[in-house]
Image (cartoon, rainbow, N blue to C red; front, top):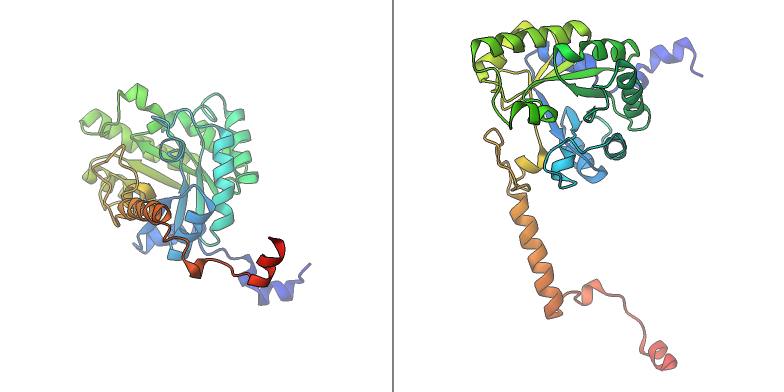
Length: 290
């Protein structure tokens, strides 16, 4: 164990690059927080090395990794498996892992147990759950166990059946007021951050101004304290759904398909593997085995 003098001399041992506190400082300094999804070791490593602030291991993996039509079929085992892989790849980013459908809605006890599993087995730095007033008891109980919680309001994909589809939220007076109330409620319950999804930009900006915790927008304009995108969307890798709010920052999907096609072509033409990709053996050895 280190003594007090050694601890004081080596404070860097106890400081992570991105934490709840550093993210709060970014809000105070108007330094926009960057967040992208990741679901595996390789992608997490690349995103982390690029300098991203936060990584979301989203239950969106059900759609973009597992081929489901929505996020509802995603299990705790799915989230733990992918979260642990991301944690092994990302050394600096703050890792937020989604609590999947019915892992926290059933009871406060279930919410605490499952949040603990995501931290302990999935190596997350925080858990994220969807909902406003209805999940405040869960947020209070989870944070009481020293587990950071990120809230999620607006369009909450796990409630897509109740919403009747993927629709913009808070466009009328009643629902706009409800979102403001929910944002304040999840902050009061102990949430360290809140994702605002598919909400009119002016409303999302107003909500951000009302809160002391950072807001992360997705389809909510640039007035939030940060932004998140599904990485397959921003790299044009996922063509099954094209949300309005997703900008293509690279045509990686096209590049991948071209590379796959070139591999097929060269393999069939026997131009791959070329001599530089193969290992030599002497004619003496070959003659001896014939």
